[in-house]
Image 1 (cartoon, rainbow, N blue to C red):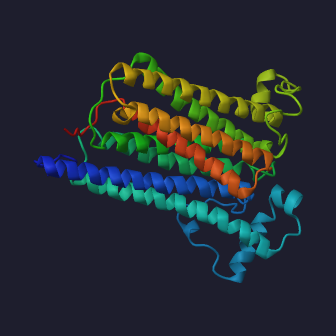
Image 2: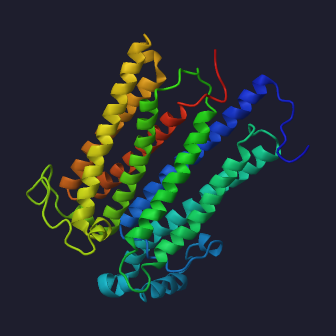
Image 3: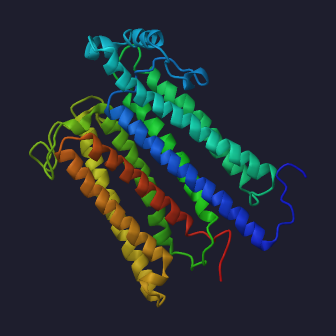
Amino acid sequence: MAFGRSPAWTEKEQRLNAALVRNWLYFVVLVLFCLVLVGGATRLTHSGLSITQWKPLHGVIPPLNLAQWQEEFELYKRIPEYQLLNKGMTLSEFQGLFWWEWAHRLLARTVGLIFAVPLCYFWLSGRLSKGLGWPLLGVLALGGLQGFIGWWMVSSGLSDRTDVSQYRLAVHLIMACLIIASSVYIGRGLKPRRHEDAPTAVSHALAVLLILAAFVQIYLGALVAGLDAGLSYNTWPLMDGALVPNDLLLQQPAWLNFFENPKTVQFAHRCGGYVLLLIALAHYLVEWRGAVSRGLDLELSQHARGALLILIAILLQAVLGIITLVTQMPLGLALAHQAGAIIVLILVTGHLRGYRPPMIEVD
C-alpha cells in the first residue's frame, strides 16, 4: 500500500477512523492544556530558570544522587536569579524549583511523542481523511519549533536578567495556543453533525474577530505575567484611583509602554477583556436574531448555542480575572484564570470551525 493512501474503507469504517483521529486530537489538546498549566505554575513559582542547560534527550533523567543534585545547584548559582534574588537558598529549596521546570519539560517531550507516533500510524495505515496529513504534519512541526522557542525564552534569563524576557514568554505561550487551536480546529471538523445554514457575513466576521481578540488577550496576559504587572494596582473597576490612570505613556517612544510599562500593560489587558466580552455579546445577539429569523429555537441552532456558551465562558473568565487581581494573584486563582483563557480559546476555535461544512454529516 502506498504511503498514506486510503484503502477502500466502508462508510462505517471511515466514520470509525474519523472518530479515532478526532479522539486522539482531543487527547492531545487535553495534554497540551495540562502542559500550559504546568508552564504557568513554573512561571508563578519562579522555577523556570532552575535548569540552566538544554538537553533534549539526556534531560529526561533528573539528578539521581546527591552529587548530581549539587552539580545542578552549582550551575544555578552562576545565574543572576540566584545571585541577586535567591542567594543563600538551600538545596532543598532549589529542588522545589527544579521539579516544576523538569515536569514542564518532561510533559512537553511526552506530548511530542503522543502526537508524532499516532500520526505516523494513522498516515501509514491510510486512516487519515483526504487532505489531513499535511496540516497535521504542520502542527507537529510547530511543536518542534516550540521546543526551540522554549529554550530561547529560558536563555534570555541566564546572563543579564533575573527572569525571562516578557516578549519571549509571550511568543512561547502564543505558539502553544496556536498548536492547541490548530488541533481543535482539525478535530472539530471530524465530528459528525448536521450541517446548518451558513452564517451571515456579520456573524462570521464577529466569530473571526472573537478568535483574533482571544489571541491578543492571551498575548497581553503573557506580558502581564512576564512583567509581574498583576501584583500592583489590585483594585477594580478603578486602577490607581481612576478609570483611566495617569502615566500610561511615561516611557518614550510611547508604543514601548504597551510592552514594557507594567501599568500600561495591565490596563491594556483590562481593556482587552472588556472588548472581548463586548464582541462575544454582539456575536450572540446576531446569532440569536439569525436563529429567530429562520424560525429555529435556540436549542436547534448549534451556532446560537455555541455563541451563548462562548459569552458565558468569557463572562466567567472576566469575573475570575477580577477576583485574581484584587486578591493579588494567589497561585490557585492565577492558574484557574490561565486555564479559563485556554478554555475560551478552545470554544471560539471550535465554534468557528462549526461554520464550515462537517467532513461527516448525520441525517
